[in-house]
Length: 303
Image (cartoon, rainbow, N blue to C red):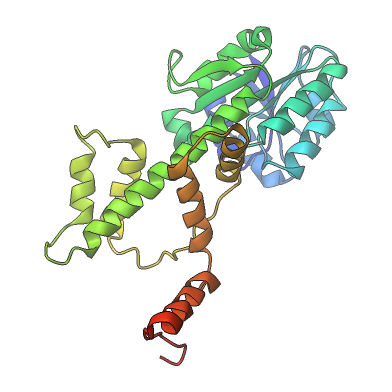
């Protein structure tokens, strides 16, 4: 099958390579010319613009957009839609808000263009291990393009699927990332608790390795954690600053709107916010309160 790929960051490039290995013909475009040149050496067909990419594809065309959520995605989809013809399809594999995906699907439908929102998980390891793909949109379009998803998935049978109409793919991916937040937080808290237990000479790298096999908490995240601790047990070069890309916040907002309690996920999002604060005001205020009502000592900046 033939398709175009717009966005050749680390993940987009790896997805292109996996598609090429699977026998697909891929036309690639990215504003960074070097990224295009690198993939043409691997067998892709390069394009110098969105218009050129579309011109090199055979109708009905399929264009996969793999750029950061927000304005970058909006611009990329609008630009490619302006070059496509009725019956062509756009796939958004980024982390867009599902409401934006519903809006984009409706707007493209007015131009008789198809749209699939594909929640994509697998990170930089997907080239070898495959990507988990959660697909939303028209089921007939999904079935026609299924060979693409089978190639990108861990196997032709596993790790991908159609989950519902437009927006459903990115909604499911949003919740997936919320669960990911909570899992990461649980591992971090448990390992920190063991590190604090000075009575026992606990080797966290060893314990992580033990948990990887047979344990009910084994997972790929735990595999990565074990590798991290093996390489740098005390994490000397890592700052306690944890970013987020928005999906956790959206998950919390959706839970509030639906009245569904998700305390573990909410707490994990809040902890990320706290990790970015240097001497947070709220904590300093609590220390001052304790001094006022109980005469408890406080630590000042002077020591």
